[in-house]
Amino acid sequence: MTYALVLSGNRVITSGATGTNSAAIKGAMRADPNLLTVILPQSLERQPHESRQQLEQVMHLVENPSNDNLSLAEASYICNKEIVSRCQQLICFAFHDSRTLLQTCREAEEQRKVVTLFYFD
Image (cartoon, rainbow, N blue to C red; front, top):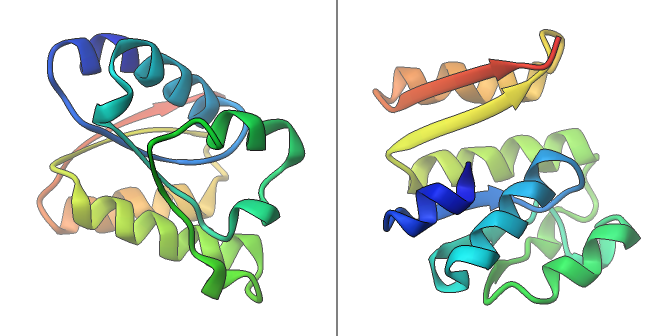
């Protein structure tokens, strides 16, 4: 999906993690790495080892080492708020019990952002 979005000229902003974020990064990097921004909830060193190699290839990587002392959930919430503030449309993949992501979607809707939410379960 991100490959097609970037090929059509859209800028993609995502968080860095395994799973869907990693797939989004891979697709955007393949299409046009310059149109990808990855905002990490914490510093690169705090990211899972398996995703660091991919993240080190990202041209526009924003680290948040000031959040290293927070729990991942707290840091992710702050990170998601930054992502929403920079975007016009939010596409989110979540489970029904993904509190942080669902809260982010609600807040994005309150800001009149276009929100598309896909559930895994």
